[in-house]
Length: 117
Image (cartoon, rainbow, N blue to C red):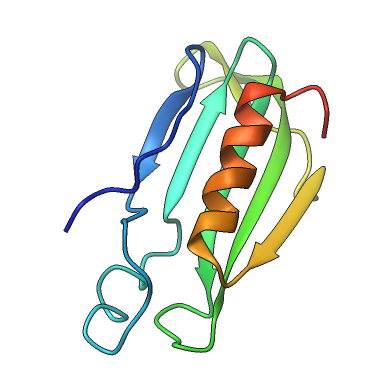
C-alpha cells in the first residue's frame, strides 16, 4: 500500500497521513478508509490547515471531504506556549468528491495558491 503522491510546496507540515494511492473497495474499506482523518497538513506562516476525511468511515458509498481552516494563536497555559489552532469549527472552504484525483488536484491547488480560496 502506497501513500498518495502530492506536490506540496515547502512551508506545509504533514501532521497526519493515511491518504493512500487507492480507491475504496471491500478489502480496504475497514482499514484505509476507517480513520477519522486521512490527511492533516498545516502552514503556520500563512495560518492555514487542511483536513481530509472519508465520510462515513468505511462506507463504500462515502466520499472524501476536504476542509480548509484558518488558524489563530492561542496560549496553552499548561505548556506555556502559543499554539496554532483553528479559528472556528467552521471551515473557510469545503470540497467533497468521490474521486481521489479530484481531491489530489484540489489539495495541490490550495497549497500552491493558498490565498486564492
